[in-house]
Length: 352
Image 1 (spheres, helix red, strand yellow):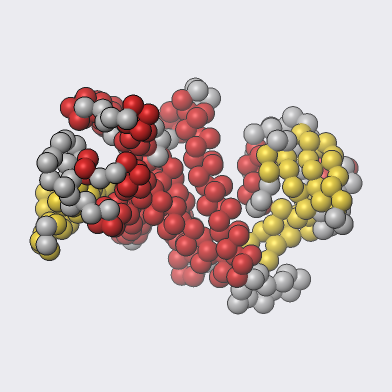
Image 2 (cartoon, rainbow, N blue to C red):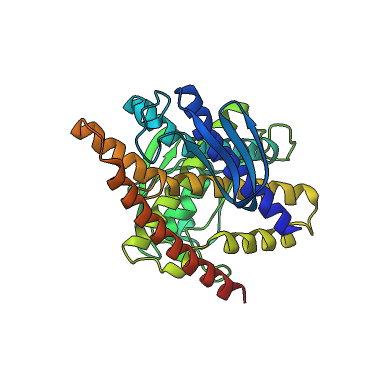
């Protein structure tokens, strides 16, 4: 069952991503030669207008093939014959749609289930928060040099300090107060905490004793900042990887993600279908935000790499020769394929 769910999740995310390119291309007057979901041999195909639509064997990946995208063409509908801003918009549209999907799914989750806030409901006796004098109602505004917008920011920022004293700015009764706290490692889960239970809001339609129901605008705000948080943690993780602060074995590909989905399904199905559906929706939002951020990396063969060449064109006032750009993307694709094989091998080892 988890494999079916994984295929559905990957299919939705890829469909949304490629549809972003497709819709933006059509809006820009660019001819789309083929719109495909999946990779490998075609299972189904049909033509509508100038575009061939296809469903392919392997449910991983997909593409939106535009006329003149990887070469020159005299056709006025070719990608290279559109204005620079339109081409930038078309290339960026895939990641934008992934971010939009993540936001929409997160909004549904908080509307139905509510959310925790970076607000102290009560402190843990003997904790750093209690010793520093934090009180119920205190809202955490900053930890170190980072702004705190949602409760997840607190956990993430504290995890980067690992027992080092950190400056914390709180809001109490309209007054900003600065305190210094030292996160302590919780032996139960190994995470670094300052020791408080957060306040929060129940879902829009929920009734929970001691918790107010969230308003629609509050849900929009929380979903937006949660999406930003997912993008931020993805980017930080990639930076740590390239600066050798994170081992390559920590990366997960499709096989590893299927394993995560399987574990999450096995745990949540015990609690019921409702909890399982919410968990799968949250995983879909997480993967969608991760994919959008990863695709915007300035690496050859990715959307971010194509944007780099478009920005270079804007600076030079003339495009990079298509054959040179194509060679760079080909080399980048080969490198990504090698990385994908290594990650798949690592995922299989971890599963075994």
